[in-house]
Image 1 (cartoon, rainbow, N blue to C red):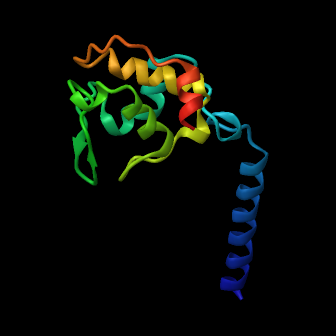
Image 2 (cartoon, rainbow, N blue to C red):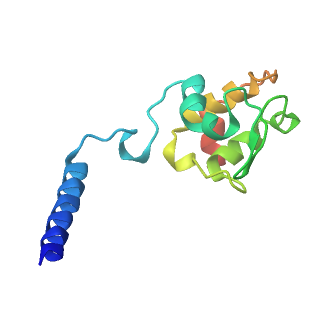
Length: 130
């Protein structure tokens, strides 16, 4: 009997927590889209967790390629395609970013971490690649 009472109270607590969680204000960006409005902010909030703050990537539970001094970033269409469609362990982020956000984060990566690619990706370029 005591076990039954404990089970009932335990289930009630779980249901109460679930209901409270559904009513809570979301912690993350709303509607499955990122809110950040600069390449730096997008990199910090979206990319840095895998590619690291210095852009040098990581190896551990997975392999996260280095963006620092990466010659693959020279062709602007390459990182745009990767951000939009994903590749290997990289998730496709295109549905969670606007064309402007994709352009901003790609331009940020292509001009930081030892990269000095000067041709700028524009939102119109991204739109044409979706």
